[in-house]
Image (cartoon, rainbow, N blue to C red; front, side, top):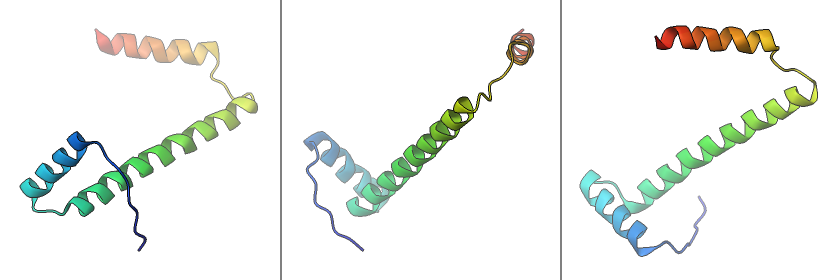
Length: 79
């Protein structure tokens, strides 16, 4: 396991300390958990963007009729 040192604003440090106390978890555990979730979400988003760009570069777009059908479906459900 690697060790990393970083500076965080006082308000985040205070929130982290309070949450650690309330949950019985260590500040390190909570920070790693938050970082793990953030990185997974960002990696997923970047992957989806890259897939979308590949589809767009290949000209793989929804037709106007496809878009219209989906809009009509959502509009019908909103009523």
